[in-house]
Amino acid sequence: DEKVVFLTFDAGYDNGVLPKILDVLDEKNVKSTFFVTGDFIERESDLLMEIVWRGHLVGNHTWSHKDITKLSDQELETELRKVEGAYQRLTLRPMPKLFRPPAGQFNRESLLKVQDLGYKTFFWSLAYRDWLTDEQKGEEFAYKNVMDNLHNGAIILLHTVSEDNCKALGRIIDGIRAEGYAICNLDYFLKSSSSKEAACGRLF
Image 1 (cartoon, rainbow, N blue to C red):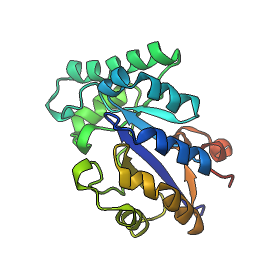
Image 2: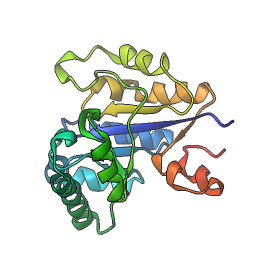
Image 3: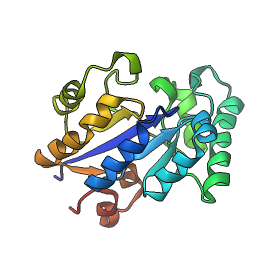
Image 4: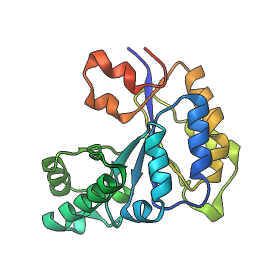
């Protein structure tokens, strides 16, 4: 079986780190998915366009990053549709139907509603407390958190505000590949088996 992992990012705001992350991804020829909130789209429209121009996917992380288990069906639909609309007005293209619930909070009803709206929901299997910008613990800490927990099929969640992630990202990508993994994007799950290689950072 092919060994694959998926590199994803959550983006609620930018503190100057994201442009450097994009440069590393370019340098390493890796495509990722960025799950964005409405606030990010409104405040960081230039960065959103940069993400799209560089060939990455953008997923829906809701408009206001609320606990979706506490929303009515209509409120949840509004949260997703507002992000879709803002994305489409900015990029002039439909938004990929990729969803990640804020803070990973969900219940059966909310996931069924998201599915009814045409979305595939993506959680993660590898993450750490990297979003606390005043508690960054260094490049080596970030590197070890990813590499020590790497497994086949891993969906890695990193936050775009982490300096540690940014500094370690090149090494992380090299380390993942050295372990024999292909780094794929989430459209891997939307493609036929014959075209899955297009979703990966290297060919099968």
